[in-house]
Length: 267
Figure (cartoon, rainbow, N blue to C red):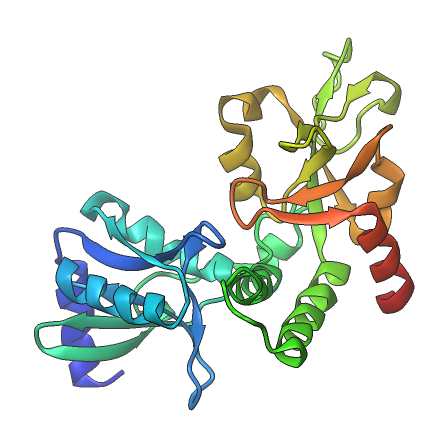
């Protein structure tokens, strides 16, 4: 690590909070791929005004974003969460200029092998990153480059097929069974949500943090089952129109027809 980076890391860590760029299109940090280095990066600012100026530049390009303050007590958690997004670089700007800092220089990397061995998916970084890129582009208020959009969709779908998901379930008269995976399928309720039009969709989650984010206080009352993409159709309830992946985050809708198409074309 260079001397300049050492100073930048110390300055960032000593800040009484910093500002970052948030995407309302995904309800997550705005992520960009550097055209030269291909780093997947987020942006952090020591002061609010430069962050707002950067946000205005993006908004002028029809990339909806907003400035978001991360208070000092939440800084470490925010930087650590970047691993779950597969973000490997933080572009930090203060009065001394701009500096690109590797995520690993700011937060300790989790034990990925341990996480992968967990029955319940704790992180799905590659899937999360490709969903962010696809939805940041899809939901922009512009005329889209169809070829580019299809490329981003294909990258996301490739990760959907490989991923394992969390299905939250409610048990009935099954108090003795405390295993989150092995439940009596005769005594479960599968939660659902309704769209503004009254259509039924079932929430699923790419990782534990997204499950906890949406379930809130109800998370302790629910059990979790892990499902592969191929297993999803087996858990469709009556009148369900499909699934909503990470409803408190990217809110990606997967209709029954889309599931069938993906399973046919990509499996």
